Length: 252
Image 1 (cartoon, rainbow, N blue to C red):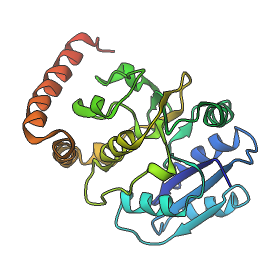
Image 2 (cartoon, helix red, strand yellow; image 1 turned 135 degrees about the vertical axis):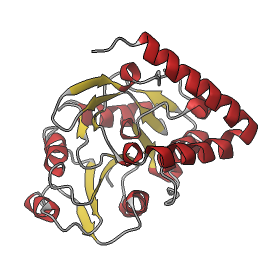
Image 3 (spheres, rainbow, N blue to C red; image 1 turned 45 degrees about the vertical axis):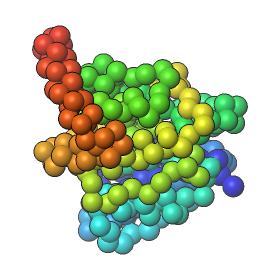
Image 4 (cartoon, one colour; image 1 turned 30 degrees about the horizontal axis):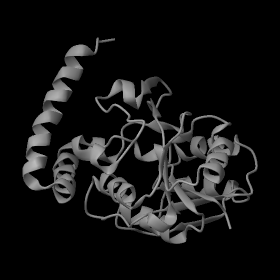
């Protein structure tokens, strides 16, 4: 049985998928790893890329879905690894040492959740910086679910959970990833911060493209976990934190 399932969700992602696959291949053969691709019925060249790498892809499907989180639920259902790691098309393993180091941590630390920082990268390749430095979200070394009261502390692509505690995603909420992380953290008995960077995160995803709806959905998620009154108060703190971050961050 594989120790780790990496899941990539795609839809018309021919511009981005190759970089994700190559970043995984750069880590070398890993018998404890399975790699799954969940495609939403792409009409471009995405499936040609998948077929070109079929010897390195454990399983893949291509069929219509109800959106990103429906596809991610399909990936969860298909996964057989002890742990699941979502790296969507365009995201990359940070470097060739990451997967061996992660598998070693899984074998020795015996935790339920592993997390670290993510390096933000633009489509053209320009490095923006570490998420903990270029956003107001500082990264706690001792993470608990209560740290999410002010928003998503850990980039989803830098968050790896034991499959047995991983819930399904609500498919109608653009902030379903925050809900998923909180539920994983609530269920986890041991949470480990990794000293190495896990991923390169391609900026400009769905929550950025539909930012207003994403913020409304985030409020719903946080109110569900922390209560309505506390979430109203915390959103005031979020706005203040964002304003102070802009003031204190020099323009390039």
